[in-house]
Amino acid sequence: MKIVFAGTPDFSVPSLQALLDSPHDVVAVYTQPDRPAGRGRQTVASPVKQLAMQHDLPVCQPDSLKPDAAQQQLAQWQPELMVVVAYGLLLPAAVLGMPGLGCINVHASLLPRWRGAAPIQRAILAGDTETGVCLMQMDAGLDTGPVLVCSRCEIAADDTGERLHDKLSLLGARLLSRNLAALEKAELEAHPQDESLASYAGKLQKSEARIDWKASAIDIANKIRAFNSWPVAETRYEGRQLRIWEAYPLPADSDTLPGTVLSASRAGIEVACGSGRLCINKVQLPGARVLDAADFINAHALEGELLGGE
Image (cartoon, rainbow, N blue to C red):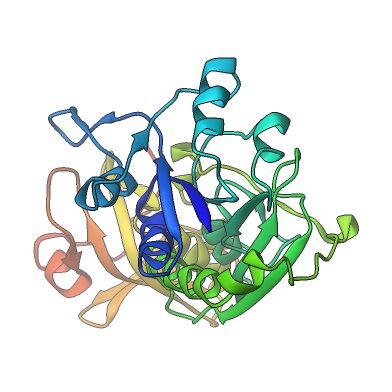
């Protein structure tokens, strides 16, 4: 089977590797154009491009697949199947209908829950206890196509956005690998999504990272987990940004103003919330390294301080 693969970030890499390890022929790899990255803002190839180059695969990096020239180039590969994993570009109708077996997407949620750009983090933010990956037959909508097969995954209480990302990346690759033969023979049954159960996972914004201490300790802890490792939940301490990398909720309520540091010890920094308390374990000031609470309080007298103010 001749396959064109389309993907860009780290999440996509195990799925491309699964195709390379299969008996099928990856005839071309599509990925987004090289972008500036890091402190030096040097142009960097995407993780998918880096893997493709290691295997001497043709790499295509159009800004869009809408122009006729881009579509003509894609048609030249004569793909039987196109596999899309976190590519980041919309596929026009002409592209969706180009491969004989269509375009398949590996999506990191149990569709129709969490369609969109950030399904992993949105699942943690919402307090979901389960997620997974789906193989979906792509259509013109945003993650609206019929689902072919899914694999479920528990969201552990200590799963961060980064940790769950890595789990689902590997799970998606395994799901794809196990079903390649069935995809080639068109043996997988397509199940339309139930629109009444759909939810949207909007792209993460840095503005969402600020903690509202009037929220519940559970919701704040979910935000901290979801936004680790980007954009990282934050509050204000002595007029500076204080990033919070790790914390867990405590059930006991406090009648103290939300954001007040109730205690600071080697066990953690306890903060009053709208309901419950939050115990913070790892923090970071601008330009500094991530510190355990025990190390941070050696240099900062926190007890009684009000977090979140300017």
